[in-house]
Image 1 (tube, one colour):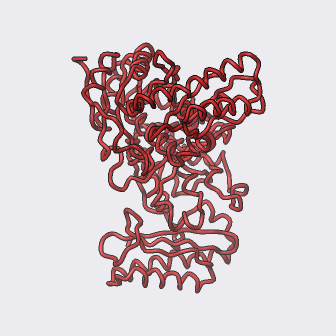
Image 2 (cartoon, one colour; image 1 turned 120 degrees about the vertical axis):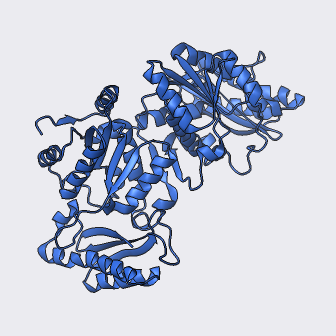
Image 3 (tube, helix red, strand yellow; image 1 turned 45 degrees about the horizontal axis):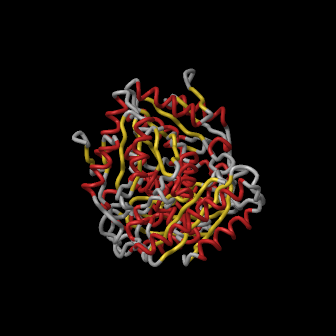
Length: 281
Length: 281
């Protein structure tokens, strides 16, 4: 922690990374929007197992928020984040300013077409364009050998895998299972928004997904029925369901039947808070 | 020439480039679609002055052609191109296959918004998306320190400068003046399409742009009038004018008056051949 280095500019980040590579050291990258929880720390520790030096990026990226979304109130705690990143083994926190990432005249965007179009992409039309663009820029700044992401944002992970492959970035993309609270709620920086009664109702999401997992294990094979049952359970707890979908685990394409590896993905709103979760089927 | 190396895959290209950098050698890149003329060779020689090793990329990129355009008949001469590239000092010709650049499932594209929207971008709506995407992929394969482009495709050069800046690629982008035939015609691989009488009529483009240059030097300052005079001269020679525009030389934004560095850009069709040209004002 005492050795944690904070880097604020792309150019300084690039030269730090070049120095590590010149020393023969590999670099891992864990992109975050800050407000760290145990899930982020698990990603940093995994990066530490796979690379000699780990950079945690901390950037609340405005281009992945729509105008009506929660950019302005997104929770922030820079000092606490540095403490947690250092404790988990990060060597660097890369926290560029918005003006350094998107200077005046900025106009270049990356789109990953098919995998971005459904689910989160349908509800949040420019979200994945913002994600793909900022992740490419963060990769170009950190120049990592490996990057570690949580499966909590499963569709995002699919977008980043495709981007990395399509643009020949040569970065090993690692996905880690979602870290959950003891009662099953997926850890999220946005959980801090939940009032106690909302926090209790929010459990309906993970419960419905665990139930779907159990149903498929017991033989359920109709993706539409599995998704509909989970959606009904979530709606029954008073949440507004954005979507519940059963998809191919790799391509996120719709399935006719659950035969190979599938994934159930859900998004629902409770009060003003929007939560997402997903599980393997 | 005897030492010219032909590389066919992205992965081999990346490892060749890494080897040069590990040896402390810099790498220059000259992207082309082949069918080399003296203009391309000037770019290769310029790269040789700026970098220790030069890679000429040769890839007729399908994603920058619209369905009705000349992809299928685009002129090709691989053996001749290798001879000319080697003679100009290239160390490598990187000629990947379409399947290596765009494997099944490919779906990632780069857009450079504002500078892509007018002129060539208005006439050819997905052209610059194709250009920006392939140039980023070629850069990610070659990992050059410097890349040299011709000013013949001036708007393309502006798109690539913006892409390189916005995505923090750290590559020095060099633009070289258009190489012309003795009578003024801008050299282009597409000139081979011109029948003798079309070749003669095509001269109206460069003549009109030289006349605009002279008019501005003599005090003409109204961009609309300068453009309209050039368009009238080109149309008067029997060509179909796609556009003639006077723009800011750096941003390509429209100008109210020609005060700082300006650029006149034109596109016109003669028979089935489409030609572009531009000059400094």
